[in-house]
Structures are given as structure tokens and as C-alpha cells.
Length: 101
Ligand SMILES: [Zn+2]
Image 1: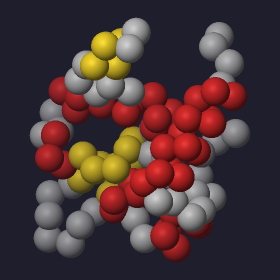
Image 2 (image 1 turned 180 degrees about the vertical axis):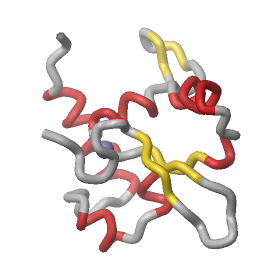
Image 3 (image 1 turned 90 degrees about the vertical axis):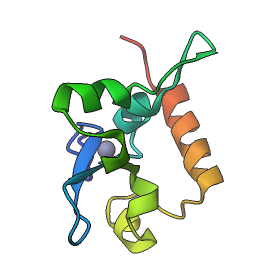
Image 4 (image 1 turned 120 degrees about the vertical axis):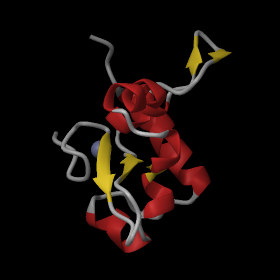
């Protein structure tokens, strides 16, 4: 299934008025992968730092989709009733269901 928010890239462009281009980390399983910040249980920099370096985007221009979008916008992408806690549960549930190929 293609993510309607990020087209399966995990990171999507978002625009604040009068601000340089920002990007948001999606709430789908691919976005969740970019948010991963551990390696075998040891804390590391999140993977999105690599994306930022590859794309020459300063870290401060990357936000979490749930911090940027309204709940109506999130619902339009199929992400409903997200609080920080439910977002984490949704991400964890998606991660558990994902098969490693
Ligand atoms: Zn997505």
C-alpha cells in the first residue's frame, strides 16, 4: 500500500508561510524507519540525519508530521486520533506487523 502522505518516501515536503522549505517525518512504517534512533538497543542519531545530510537540509528544517499537521490533515491521510502516546503505539504496532525481507 502506498502511503497517501509521503508516497512511501517516509519524508515529505511541508511549507510554513515565509519560511524556507521544511520536511516532515511521516507516521507510516517508512517514516518510522527514518525516526529509528537506536542500533541493537544502543541509542544513535536518528536515521533521518542521514537523509538530511544527503539532501543538504539543516536538521531544524525537519519536523515530525504530527507536530506540523492539524488533526484534520492527519485524518485525511488516514492517521486518526493521534496523541504522542497513540502515535508511538501505532508506530510500534506497524513495526511489529512488518515482515523483515
Ligand atoms: Zn508515509
